[in-house]
Image: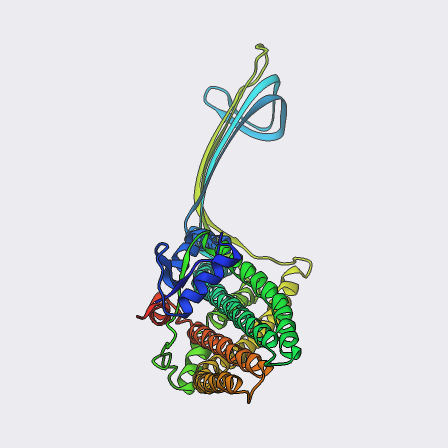
Length: 468
């Protein structure tokens, strides 16, 4: 297994490492970072994943809120202040021992600058409340939605880390290819200059080699820039600044990754896709909204208990009256909305329309899940065939390169022919690496479409990368 570590290296040092790797030499510069390690590092570093994790924690509280809607609601109130009070009762019936009775009695009380203290404790338990029951169901579904979102974000993190990881490997391969070509061009240029000095070849060979080297300079700069960008993106995810990346061996066997049958994946994706699952939950929440406003005159029945009192004391003395009032009540309270200005009916019509929208969006998401499963499955199966074809093309281009070099030595081929064959070989080699990484990413994406992408699946790909 060969590893690359370019950060902090000079251009010459990078080339030396690449050439050492390509020739089969190994170097030790620390423990390599593989896909599993990169994913674990990203779990603690990536802000998008951290936000999803916090959202999942917050979502669990929706269950507690749903339970609270079915629990008694208890409130306490107390207040005090300065008050002027005047009360008068006319035509009252009055009777008292020793005083007889009267049918047209009048009572008057007055308190100036008195102190008034009030308190009340009330408890309410819903016995029948359609709107509150629907709200509880919605809260439970929202908690479920938060869990599904976090599960999906876990899988998306695997895909984002894997893509960033493979992008770095491909950028390394591309840079190595360009630098290897520059090395071959430099050697060809030296040979051409020597043979021209000896009069064996025309100056055209020297010019062609120099022109190819000039073109490769810009390609190397672009390849190096792409590598730096890819490496920075991976480091943003993992937080590791100086690491070696575990790589697949030159003769990596990817045929062992079995994509299975397309129909099986279509069924899984159209039933277990995380995005479809989230949309189905949203559809359920929309239906609960209909239930909240289905009946414009839905009654609300509550069990209500109250205890309260009021104390009034005068401060001026004399004719100031005092009042003490305590009350305790237990009973049921029925509330029927008779007219809400059309609000409940408007809410109901809105909920029906939104439920229809959610239904159509769910079906659209189901079709999209199947399409994604088909695309990624083909990415794996067709990718395997493409890899085999490119491997054969690479072998043929190597045979062609060797034959062209031999032809140049005997005078049948020019330096330009050799450089073209060299370019074809390295381009094919880079295309092979690109096909391998695309196929591996498709394999992971296929599992993600069905909500089945986990560490076990990632370990299958990781085993290919680090296989000896």
